[in-house]
Amino acid sequence: MNIYHVDAFANKAFEGNPAAVIPLTHWLPDATLKAIAAENNLSETAFFVPTDTGFHLRWFTPSVEVPLCGHATLATSFVLFNELDYDKDTISFETLSGDLIVKKKDDGFIMNFPAAPPVPCPIPEGLEDAMGVKLLEAHVNRFCLVVCENEDDVKNAKPDHSALANISPGDFILTAKSKTYDFVSRSFAPTHGLPEDPVTGSAHCVSAPFWGARLDKTVLNARQVSMRGGDMICTLKGARVELFGKAVLYMKGSIYI
Image (cartoon, rainbow, N blue to C red):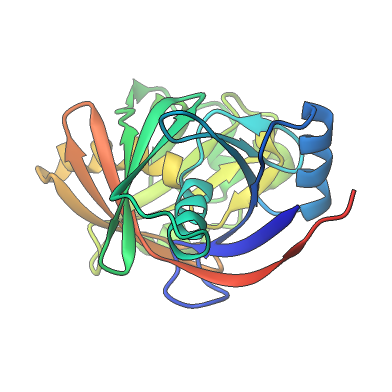
């Protein structure tokens, strides 16, 4: 099988979030897909097979299958358009989160995802100590989004990942308003085997609607301030959010099993 290693939400190699992309002609057993993802040991491995209307796309962390993954969708789109000579204007992916549409634009890609605006909730007990930073408020929808006073707090936080794994709901966004961007964030998903995810498209389906309402904007420039870091432009469109990002091919090769 061919395998592509793509840095998504990146302007050059060694930035953004790396993902493996593996085209298939038919589905392999789930145990094999999970074993390949564990062997790759990247935050996500994407597998896809052709359908009558586009492609069926699935995403796996090294430990579990996930219902939505932005950066691996971006990486898959990059491979289809730039490596596999896909010649249509848009790609339709059938996924666990419904049909996802991706368009090529200039030197990047626009992904249309379901928005997940969060609702206020109490700050989970123990979360402030686990994050190691003062938390002002919390909101929840898929992720628990917690707000810091400023972007330096987000950048400098040193979370206790083992403690985070024991706090419900288990997946967290740490975020704050930014001077350079509209907002910055970091994403932690210990329940999915990802102590900190470098750049997370699915998390921006939560944080973009939150900051859009807070800042009264429909187009937001965002940066995930992980060690690798990555940029994206988020455009709110009612119940959907469009995420624009770029990607870079790092490596391609073959898998023998």
